[in-house]
Image (cartoon, rainbow, N blue to C red; front, side, top):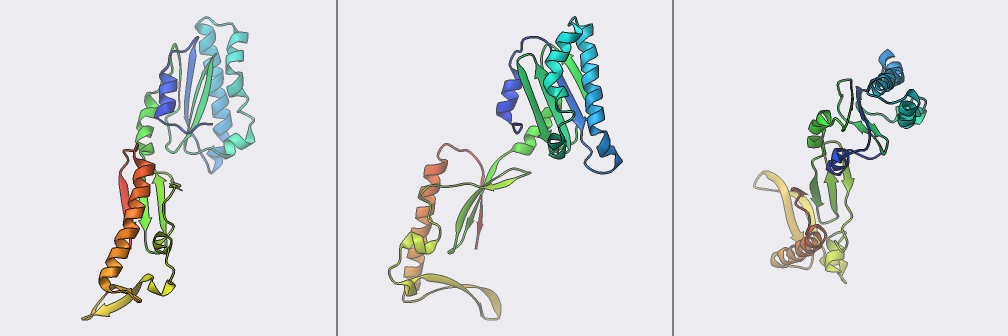
Length: 230
């Protein structure tokens, strides 16, 4: 099963040979209704079978086209891994189905092309963005959507400040410590064996290395980037 995306949408909009079956249904994941998911799905396939014969296909031909979908009716793992909505597309040359994070109104279409209108709002849920978490101890980049967040590997990015500066003398490393001044709480930057200007210079070197690695990895991307820093 492929995640639904704009690339998948392009595939679905291509011209198909023969009749195209589009199935949409909400998925109930708890309670008594959850036991009816497979029954409702099978009923939709039977309705598709009837429509296909009305449109001129022999019953045996209709069953052959629908065979991959009928195989899902008794697939326990398939039904255990459902989300809130199911969309299925079937033609003599294409078979696609998607578990969707939003409930869909139950419907069926059998025409000369796939019916994709119910899927269009789902695309907004797949908008991507990046999150950069940055501190002296760790740098990580994540790629996210409204539903998921996963770590994005960046070649050449330093793991932390120490690696970026490659200190020979650990006592010179910059550290952040909690402190208070004038009755106000805050974070104070201090350096061991280094003046404040050296601290700033070291941080600037660190940030430039991070920026260089990100620029190289993301030069072809046009995604919004959120900075989560200390």
